[in-house]
Image (cartoon, rainbow, N blue to C red; front, side, top):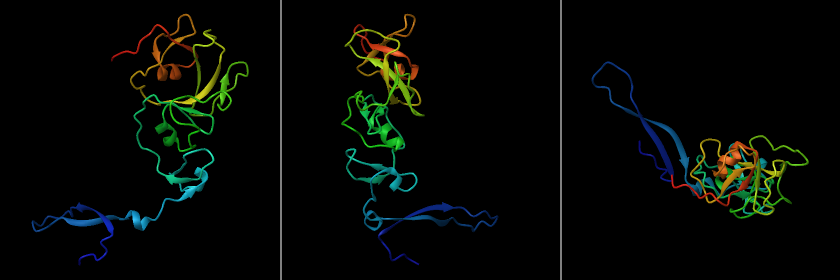
Length: 204
């Protein structure tokens, strides 16, 4: 009998019924009936991810703005474009922030968290970072002193292989440490690094 409800999307799969008779034919089995966007209603409003159902996070434009419950991305390209989260954590890119589903951005992508906002680590206080984050002791050009005990800030970085090098390359502050490494590799390796003035991004 034909369905009268045309506003539903019917997801079906052909299921073969095992039998020995040659007259057997495939039978359509309905796996799910999905509502249209109009039937589903508007996205659920939220203040934090605690307001959302399991598996969703609260996506917000700014730290203090209301948000909507959204699905986190299933895959990230891991392109170096850091963004500071409202939790004081710097994310390698905004997709990783959404994938963790924990916090809205503090500012537009393009820079790490400033020290007055960032969760700090290492340095004189010898603090640590939350689980799932790394301590980044990435020192800029001023002061251009490679201090192994420099203050660091907490980052979320790609968990797997690092992407192609970005515009910044770094030299380890250890005499026998790696040199001319990309930001992701420096973050995963740990320790203090100074931005290099002699290295150039690789073409491979």
